[in-house]
Image (cartoon, rainbow, N blue to C red; front, side, top):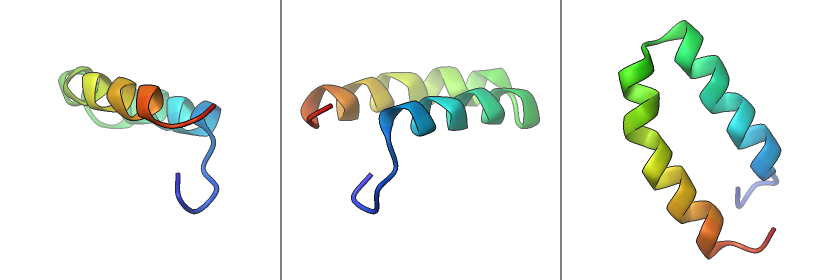
Length: 42
């Protein structure tokens, strides 16, 4: 996100990872992403 990645793009990345990798990995990453989103300005 320091290089211009938006929150919408990061969310889309998780969606793509869910389909191309495995769902449990994405579910493990979601709390971390949520924490990052909460700490950064929108």
